[in-house]
Length: 376
Ligand code: HEC
Ligand code: HEC
Image (cartoon, rainbow, N blue to C red; front, side, top):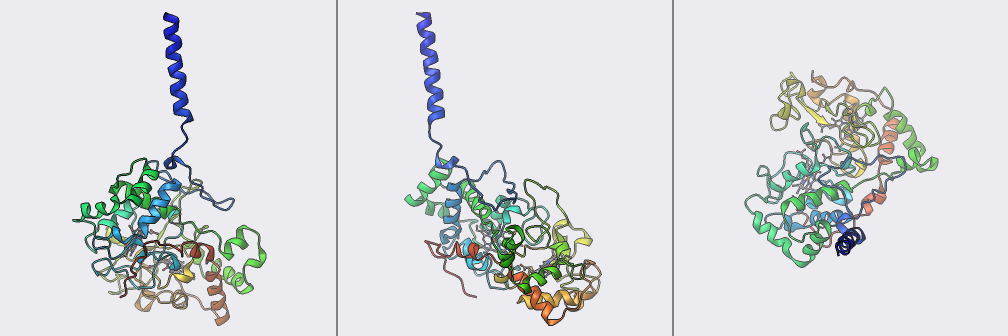
């Protein structure tokens, strides 16, 4: 009888472990395939929020949904528009209450690799943290959820979302923790590595870039122009981290855009990194942004003050803008240079060769719930 009992117990054990092991993995656990070209490193992802197909799907739906703003007027995608590499043509962003943001909307391209987020912050390192700003900030208001939390959450109780939440988290109930995690997963999924430059440089397709673009590439990587010092690596920014490299180079620079008091000050409404670190040397420092898809993300700079790539090249050729050229805090790489017209065109051709049409087109048929693009 004793043996029978033992057999019984072990039967339960075998049955139990089989039930455990044989259960098909739920969608929430289904592994995400980064689908990166050979040789590119996988971005670092926080342990608390591993990537999954279902989370990216939910995040995408949320990203384009105006229901996420307190007055149902805008979505993340109203500012981060796919056809402009998830930036927008406005000089500075406008939130759901009509309040103007002081900064230009950043493009969201390979953001998964950024070790510092936003234009000038050394302490914002995780997309999950950063997303709380557009969702809950009260000054400026972006989506404006603060004070309207339960009203906003109620909108995600409908059947369509219950299923998406269930798939992503094995739990159909919407809450802000899950919303942030799903949005972060979607933002991480926005990788772009199929520009003519990539085809030329990483896929050995010599014909992918025009001769003009190749000449422009030489200029970009020359000591005369110095561009690559700050826009370096496969992402054209120093603010990168991934599985093979955790080293953070110097991502923030003063490029001599302003100099309001001849001692290097930037305008009081936006002085860059100094606002976070309080270090006088950080006056006017901003993060060098990625240059991938820069052709479509005009206007440029943290305040959208340069309208075209032509203006940007004039700016670097002059070693800054106006009094900014004499900014004592300006990076020594901003010494200025002289380019012939043809060379300028070549440099622009190179910047255009960083456009990944496949990436830009792959999101065009979205959204199912079209954002009302706010005009201003
Ligand atoms: C009102 C326009 C607006 C809305 C809405 C908005 N953003 Fe942004 N986003 C911006 C601006 C402007 C910045 C730059 C902020 C700064 O530097 O202070 C930015 C920066 C970011 C960044 C940092 C990118 C980088 O390279 O560091 C991420 C990620 C981001 N937004 C994601 C989102 C998500 C997700 C949503 C929706 C929950 C959203 N944004 C809604 C305007 C907007
Ligand atoms: C000292 C570092 C440094 C050097 C050298 C440098 N950049 Fe930049 N670049 C930056 C920073 C920082 C910004 C953002 C500045 C701001 O917003 O105030 C920027 C912005 C840009 C932008 C605007 C991108 C956007 O999304 O708004 C372009 C285009 C650009 N740089 C191209 C170049 C080219 C071309 C060269 C070489 C001629 C170059 N950069 C040299 C640091 C640098």
